[in-house]
Length: 395
Length: 131
Image (tube, rainbow over all chains, first blue to last red; front, side, top):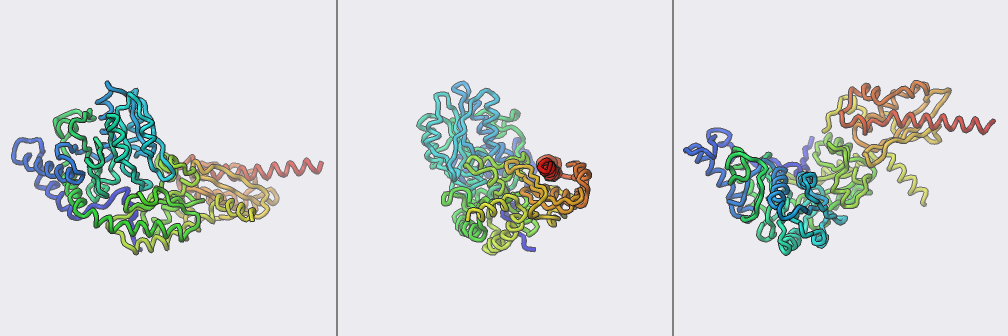
């Protein structure tokens, strides 16, 4: 059976070159980067080289890059650490309503700790209006955090404009660039941000490693106390193999970014066009143009995502959904709901994310396999029969 | 993939009694699209027995399997027997359901009971009319 992996937003595979770069650090090169001997030196040099590679990817200085254990940790660290470091100045934080849970829930935790939170809405494309951010600013606002792109609907946010507003008001601005760093050009100076999160497994690096970049001079309170690793900002012995892998993945992403974008975009555009053309009552979610290169997301009316996922999996296709049944919390995607999509429609959410292994044949296969699955589930759906009866009655 | 038993997978892939009954004796609906699952049961009753059962379900794999299993368990049973089918007995027949699916997706028995109640209230109304 054909196997088609269309879930690169969940994780990308590890590139062979990245694995090769990591292997010595899972074997003979085992030193602790903090140790003051040859073993330690070798490990420390590898970590520093990776820091440089990540810095180059985002146009930053290496000493401003802090390695973390995941994108989730980077977002927790940024939101909590940047807010806590400034709490004597004020206790108001602004985020968008469609942030990843690692950012959104961190902000809600701050609320429990006595901060006040404003969640800025989005339009039907999942786009934040910079004017809404401007209006949310108060005298005691100390942090604004808006994601660079949303991983569920692919929409790329106007970060430059929002960063400018934050700067005019002298407020620290963080962006979650986990969906964009290593995928589309990300330059911290050009964006004008003060802090930025990224994660290795979004661009063919290993899982369990991320980074937070914090502009020099911006204060952040560590989440983990202990030794003086990462300049005292993130204690704990470094995950050297994963950090080396992240560095290599960053280097490769920088070198081949435009080629990757050129490869993914046509696949995305074909699926965005061909799925709604081959199945009735399918809508594209997210922004039609300003979206991630490999990102095609939809809502299929009258049916539920998990059953679609299960049938697709039986045909060898891996995708995601934001339906309630597919989430551990059994709630429909907060992103789709914030975009004004009804709960009913959000249940039919379908997320297809392309990667470097995908080809035109994968699009052909998806477009061939999905329509009969949708048809089968609709024949079972009381919502579909109600719709059919209503439209017949109307005639 | 969610961790489903073989029985759940069988009923999900080959659901029994999917469809609608024209002029049914009772209709029962349970759930709503907000929570993710919604089921409609249609029944035909003869001599106090469920002569035919059909269902339509919007929902996850568990919801579809539950509906199918309920229709199979209740087919040919007396109305009293069918009223004794519970979410727990349905889950047992399906060799178990994932914990987080037990409440939201296991609505088949309730939907069937509503269809039976619908039938009984119609019967009662007809009886009153005759009097």
